[in-house]
Length: 368
Image (cartoon, rainbow, N blue to C red):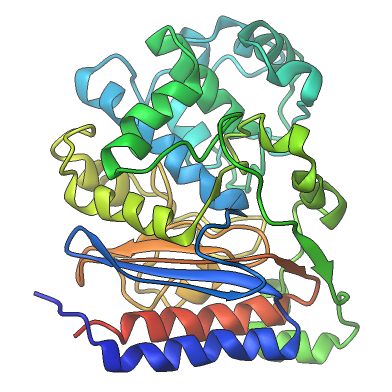
């Protein structure tokens, strides 16, 4: 059984302070969970432990996990077309897109548009789904769906339960972890997010950091769209693919709940289903890295690409990063859950890549 090693915490905190001293962030939080408890929670810079931060795409697995009870009781079939449950989705060639393809970013509608005018109601979402077309046949490629796929997941949750998806996610994912609302209109205001720096013109330096020219990342969403989360009107929507607002301690608690399932809100064998049974190893066209996606999150893996997934070097770890380098994951082998949140979208991708590598390693070092 892993034990907390407080003496190793100093290295982790010092590394985060380096980010503050360099101006790469101005506010942040870090939290570690172990044995069902949060054993470390610290704030940095302009943040206090009461402040909340936008976690962006680290929201995705928190929402997708809420579908798992439907897989267990048979009310949702991974191999079935989405249109079986949402008939409006079946237009413009999408009639055979499966639930599994949506969950593993193989749906073929990565950049399908949906905006505030359609977000607020089931009718509005379904009407927008009916307009979407495919960029390529579903299942033929893996491409990161920044927003679109999780609006479909949200609508599936609402349809299967007959109540708002935000309530379903709260009852199945947040409440059992002892966490309050972190998605939707009841969430408190987040610390402002800022953009900083610029994309480098040092192509050789980028290649040296990421290893190959094709591994140099490009953003799937620009900073202007990401900064829109500073608007309270955007924060209260509860965007299922990127709108959660939380403290690092809350995320560490949620991932501890994923490891232990003490509240029983998820199926008994949920970890096998969500982390290992359903996997997709195809190379993602978004970042040229083997996708290694499960039905809810990334799996770190042992193929040498864990850094490109923003994950720690422990193969069974699962989780999902957020824009700007929000790190959120859990490791079944050590029992550790980890969250590092901050306030800055640095435009040089090397900054968050190097920081993630260091911080994830140092997080693992605090357990023995």
